[in-house]
Length: 152
Image 1 (cartoon, rainbow, N blue to C red):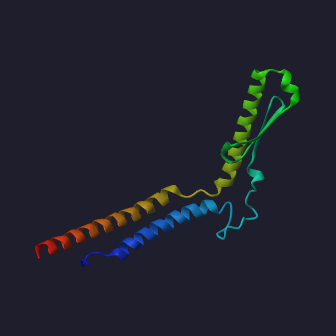
Image 2: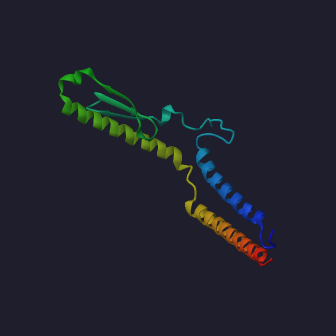
């Protein structure tokens, strides 16, 4: 191996990058469970994360799961005489209200899990620069070794 090549330095840089990424994802995961994958007693249940909304003075009810996926829709039978335009409007209002409710609930849960993005970006840039320098050094060392071998 060429004398200037230090694969352990490159390995340390990559390990540092992985540690930082793990740290960032761990901060978010801490809101829903601990490191053992056990649910924290203070973490919200799946039912608490369901968004609910109504339309037409409660004649239409909608529930959405995480990220707004429609889970259930209930239309009061008395609306059957109202016509499709009215029913459609009520359904739209109920679903949009449920989605807004779910977004608000999700924002509450993730508010405490905010990662200092600027600091994390600086650390990742530093690690990336170290890895880049390490790769460049390795390429230079390999090039020098190849030239020496070609001369023989």
